[in-house]
Length: 177
Image (cartoon, one colour):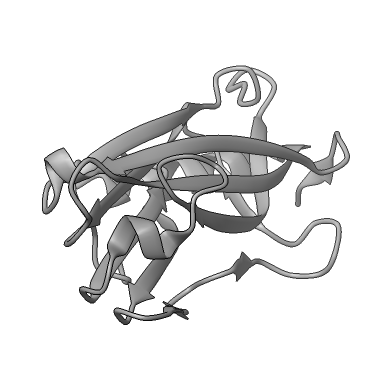
């Protein structure tokens, strides 16, 4: 059983998908080294993950970024570095989002978006790895434009029993294979 050590707080990271790399993967990471401590059986409990899609600059309209051509943006957060987008049944997958541009308006397809892992103080996905990995791609952008995706992770630090910490660590190791 986990015992909460902190109130929820927010970690953020921005992933930039540019017109120079259309079709290629972009990656970013959130360092968890300050939050996870093996010796104290301390982990990070993720309560919620949100995604914010913006243009090349914070105030730019997405219509200017995508133009009139339909486009798709995919983004995932994992606790293992797979180096690629993963299937929804991958144990390392924490969260994913898909943003669809129909050529005239935006639409979000909610595969797991927004990810909310429960309403209670101890509801969530516990992570004991030292980083979260963000990977994404876009299939169409206007020339010299970028789509910036900000990932906001709401989490708390928790203490785990020895058995719970070991179970999570084994599951994470098994997911690495």
